[in-house]
Amino acid sequence: MEKLIIKGGQRLHGRVKISGAKNAVLPIIAATLLGNERPSTLDEVPSLDDVHTIAEVIRSLGVDATFDAGEHKFIVDSARIEKCEAPYDLVRKMRASFLIMGPLLARSRRAKISLPGGCAIGTRPIDLHLKGFEALGASIEIGHGFIDAFAPNGLKGARVYLDFPSVGATENIMMAASMAEGQTVLENPAQEPEIIDLANYLNVMGAKVRGAGTNVIKIEGVNMLHGADYTVIPDRIEAGTYMVAAAMTRGDVYIENAITEHLKPVIAKLKEAGVAIEEDVDGVRVSCDGPIKSVDIKTMPYPGFPTDMQAQFMAMLAISEGTGLVTETVFENRFMHVDELKRMGANIKIDGRTSVVEGVSRLTGCQVKATDLRAGAAMVLAGLVADGETQVGYIHHIDRGYDHLVEKLVSLGANIRRVDE
Ligand code: UD1
Image 1 (tube, rainbow, N blue to C red):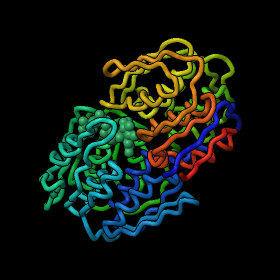
Image 2: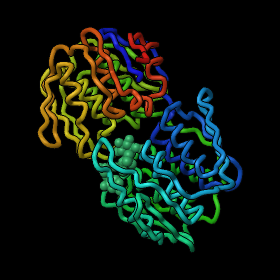
Image 3: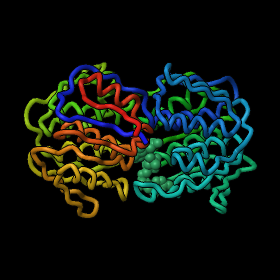
Image 4: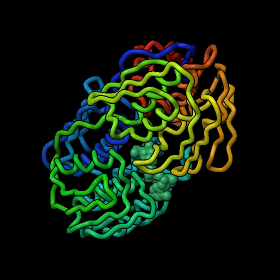
């Protein structure tokens, strides 16, 4: 098993370039299934395990997909879809595999996908996805570990209200509705930048999606969509992670490619903590040479503070001055990094959905594990400032979502390496 070995204490400095967004590219690759004329070429596709997994998922349907990770290019020819069933082994590996259900249902009129199953960060049901498909006229059967959705006469546009602005449900319904007959009005959808990116890609494929990024999305269904070329937006969570790394190590880092518009709550909280932020059109410079003040954060759907930055902020609060409250409202069980941070000397108490983080003057290196993707990032951040050596295990979680993390951190002066035990 591979692990990361970090020797703490290095100040990060220099420039780092942010890769394409994981959470934008996964639904976009799912959406390529809708194009039955000419291939799609996607650019700025990050080299991540999750991208390889979704590539396997669409290949398992008989679709031709090539990923040149070095060139960050992903080419899909989905003129022919041979199967409409996604197997357990792939869906189990990555929940986002479920995003192929909307496009498959629209294109093949049937989608049979293994139930995603439990997940480390809460129960994460898919009821909102299914409610949306049913509103569009699909029939759903659940049995033998599979969800079987079919719409033999095609999908029909409808009004769909989401009880919670789920990112995945918004994406799945948007993709299905793009090829439904008539208009779909999606109320209370997620408003994340990745939703806008997916809508933009669907529109270059010939779809008619309006209002993505607001609280109502209107989709006029069309008969056919075609493949298209598209460049994925930069990853705001990767950018946010390097911003926190710069702050925690009292560094000075220019984060190239970061779209600061997408990072408003992260920037606001870093400024409140006393971190210097200079924004320009190409990215953001983050520097810090004094103490970091504790702040309170509460995760919310976009444009609120992102749940995917919660663990990294908690690592920062662990070494800040004073007490900070971290409230998680998006997921039920997203505090697994707390025990790992405590192993490093952090002073954190969990009270229901809130963690009370009392800053300590130093963390100490030890053996910890990445309990999920962002928790893994938090461990790396803590390791960068801890006394002595930190060993982070279970790094397959980190490889799911950080493109060349070790190389990028080393280029900023960190002492970090990957070893195979
Ligand atoms: C996406 C992101 C993930 C991020 C999350 C919230 C991708 C590939 N992943 O995940 O990184 O942390 O958004 O910003 O883009 N829910 C239901 N019923 C449903 C669907 C969701 O109750 O049918 C609940 C979930 O259990 C969870 C909350 O809604 O508590 C948010 O989930 P959702 O927005 O759907 O997240 P994902 O799309 O899974």
